[in-house]
Length: 311
Image (tube, rainbow, N blue to C red; front, top):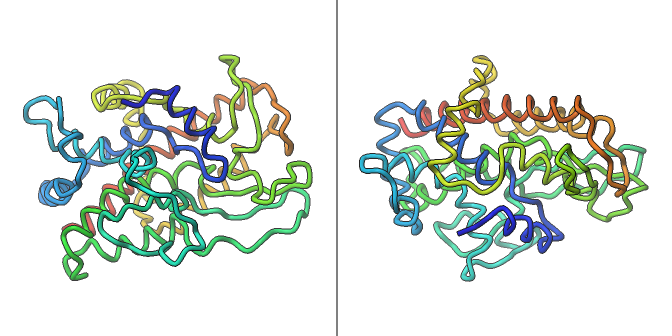
C-alpha cells in the first residue's frame, strides 16, 4: 500500500522524469466524476474493457457490494503511475524504438507518456528540439484504437483505456505541459515542469514546485476517500465550462495547460533558479482555484470523449 511518504521518496529517486501528476487523490476524483457522466451503455463497455486489466482484482478488493465497477474505474486512474513501482515493469527512454509502441499490457513504464513539454525560455536561453513522443502523441494513438471500427484487439483497447483515464488528468495539470529553460537553472533538460524550483507553502514544507501542484488535491488516498472528497468540496464543487468541455483534442488541452502554467504556476514569487521561496496567499489561492477548475474540466472532457469513442 502506497503512502504519501512513499510517493515523495519515489519523486526523489526519479531525477530524470516527472512526479506523479495530481497524485492519487486528483486522478481518482477526476475519474469518479467522469464515470458518473458516462452514458449507461458506454459505462458498461468501459467496465468490460477494464476487467481485462491484470490489476482488476486489486481494484475491486474491498469495494462495497454493487460498487465494484465504479471502484475499478476510479482506481484505474492511478494504474499508469502504479506500474512505475512494479518490479516486472522496466524503464525505457523516449529515444528508444519502443517509445511510441502501443502494445497491450507490455512491461514498459513509458514514463515520458505522462507529459507534453512545450518548451519555454524565461531569458532567451536556447531551446532544444522537443521530444517526439509525449502524452499528446500517445493519447491520439489511443483515441484511434478505442472505437469498434479500429479493429484493435480487446486487450489493446483495455490497455489504452487504462492509460487514457490517467493521461486525460495528466494533461490538465499545468506543469505537465511545460518545460522552462533559463540560464540560472542551468539544467540540460530545463526545469522539468517545475521540478527544479523549490517552494515553501503555508504548511512550512519545502518541496518542488511540481510536487506542490501535484499535491493540491492531497496525496495517497483510498477510492472511498477520493469519492468522499470529490463530493464534499472537491471536483464536483466546480461546474466546468460547457463549451470547453466539448473540446476533445489533446493538443488543445496541452496548450491550455501551457498557458496556465506560464500565468499561474510560474507567477510571483516563483523564481528562475533553485532557491526555495515562500508562497504568498494569493499564489496558493489561485493555484487551488486553477486546480479545481482543471480537474472538473478534465472529468467532463474524459466523459465526453469516452461517450463518443465507446458509443
